[in-house]
Image (cartoon, rainbow, N blue to C red):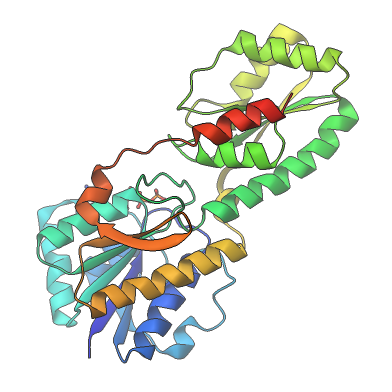
Length: 319
Ligand code: ATP
């Protein structure tokens, strides 16, 4: 019988609970013992582990956030901290650790792998900034949250013939902006990966206003700058009324979409399968709709490319 521990770390993302549930239930189905680690690597260092049973993950698949809670741990960045985490895993007899989080969490898992601890990474972050996988758990829900906001802002912007600038999350990755811009019919998407020019944007806004467009939506990725600064510049140059909305942490919350729940369930089960097969130091991803696993070292070496085709399509379709 194997003993598996699972933790969530870094920024929380909708669907993390569905992933925890899948790890716990699939592992129990295979006859394993499962520990939930509270508060990520911080809780691991402190030995804050609880044995899970079927009821521990009851009624959570639809809930945002993470029942195991998440934390950032400075101590885990030190050799002493990681040694203490390894000692805790040994005390509890853990044969495999599943970490759910973003690139920082994976770098932590790589360090544990270097110490000979069998580790599996499940990508859980709204940013979709991990290069090796098409999607991370939480991204689809975040995009849908932005779409909901775009719909509401469109109603009020068209009534007042305004330009609405919506600042979305994603840090240096423009994926949330590009996907929500395309799906929400935005007039412009501004992302860190592509150079942009304020005068070009103002020219296009004036052209579409003079063609009779009642309102315009601009999606601004947070890695580019502040929505209010852009709104001020556009208002000054075009004399159009321009409003900034910063969606902030609401993008991290909410009930996960069906897509995220299915993705999390498949990835959670896959993580357990890998541990059962003694195949560790791996991360799980999805490519062309297939769940796959790859070496954690290779995955962290890869460079993220942005969805150029979708970006161009957004531009074409906005005219
Ligand atoms: P998100 O993308 O949502 O912010 P993340 O997993 O990237 O999630 P981070 O805060 O970067 O979030 O990382 C989570 C934790 O992983 C950190 O608090 C730290 O404990 C650990 N970690 C990050 N980088 C390293 C590293 N290079 N070595 C060891 N541990 C690390």
